[in-house]
Image (tube, rainbow, N blue to C red):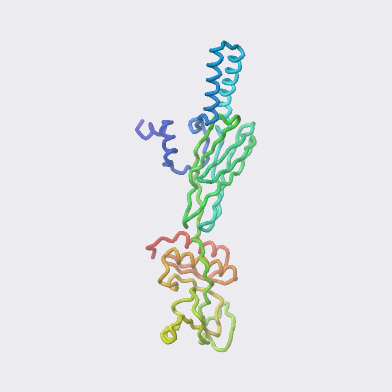
Length: 325
């Protein structure tokens, strides 16, 4: 047997990996066997033990027979409760369920399937993950779903953090707990900003265009600049004369199709701000029922307006890595 096998079979080494949060996510079903369930007294249990010790000293000092009986009776109940606390946790089976994609800053929910393969109910099981706490009872021979909320901060894939399952049943004098970390992750989209949807680019094709006046793609005038406008449509000569930002507008067959292009965004925006703005535009385009394409470094999604296209666009934005080409 090599060193790795020896360490992996060690209870102390397994506990140290969980305690130091170095354990990798686990695939498949996780069975809480005996070596994965730890039991220690709580503060109430320690206080109870001190009280029993004082009762024993008093009984010895005053030679109280009834004091001996009460002391040993309560001590026996405490010892038996250790077994019940352990059995309430042992041999539960935990596996990963489904997760839904959310936007950065929202709460992500991970579904854990908890299976109880015994006749008796498991009472008051608590699931603790970061600063969130859930409690549930698990009936015998039943698979229950436990939803674990996790706060999100950044876009990309979010692996479910370590979850602590614990119980204080039945008397609260002992705590039995185990660590689980199923291989379960959620996709986190960039947080959208509050910019308005840009104007559709003028097109002279026949697609899904709507006639808005005479001619095709005719210049119709100037309007005030909006942060979502493409730099290509800014009237730079008028800006030089008036020193105020204005944008060209067009009449004709303005297509109801949008090209959401990374290159159209202002150079002052950093990468995350660009992703937030494009995410906002994708949401607004879908709400308006428009067809839209998305161009970002490393990804080009053609014009479409379906649900699958919407999900692919958001996924491309969520998984964008700087330096893509």
